[in-house]
Image 1 (tube, one colour):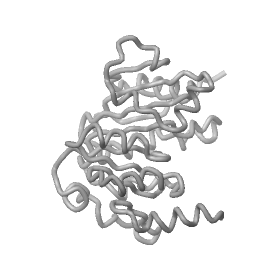
Image 2: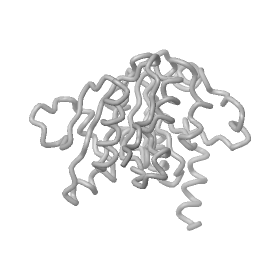
Image 3: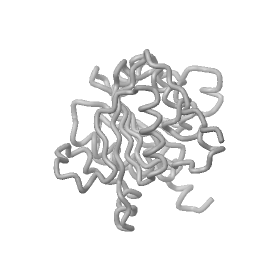
Length: 236
C-alpha cells in the first residue's frame, strides 16, 4: 500500500463523523448506532438520506450543503476515496454529513426499520456479466434490504452512465410494478431539469461526461408491501 493511502487511512480515523467498524463488530450483530444515527450522530430528528457507493463523497457533501435541514451518510468500502469527502466535512464543519466505511452487502446491520428516508445510488459498478447480476446495487436482493430500513414509499435515486444498469433497473421496476417517479436516459439534455441536486457532479460523472457519455437517471418509490423478484430469463 502506498504512503499516500496509508496517510489517508490514518487521517480518516481522526475525522469527526467517520465510522469504520471492524468485521467482528457487525458479523452476526447489529452495529451500536443502528436505530440511533439521528440522535447519537446528528443530534436531531431530521430526515436521513444515504448515498451508497459514495466514492469521493462529492454527492454527500454537495447535498449536505444544499439541505442543512437533512442528514446525509455516504457509504463506501474504499477508505482512500472516501477520505476526500470526509476531510471536507471535517474541515468545513459540515455537521449534517457523515461517512460509513463498510460493504453495502452488510447494510442491514446498520439501519433499523423506517430509519432512512431516501437513498441515492451514484455511479455504482454495473456488474455487467450475468453471473454478477446479484451484485448490482439495484438487484432484488439489495432492494429487499433497502425495504427493511427505508420508510414505506421512500425514494431511491439511481444515476449511472451504464445503459445496461439503467435498462436493467427500469425493467426490474416495471416487472415488479414499482412506481417510477422520474426517469431520463440523457439527464443533462432535459430542458425541464429544475432540481439543482441533480446537477451535483461526482468525479467519475464528470469523467463520463467529458468522454461523451450520457447520464441516466431513475427515481422510484419503494413500498414495503411489494415483494421484489428477479425478471425471469427468457427461454429459447
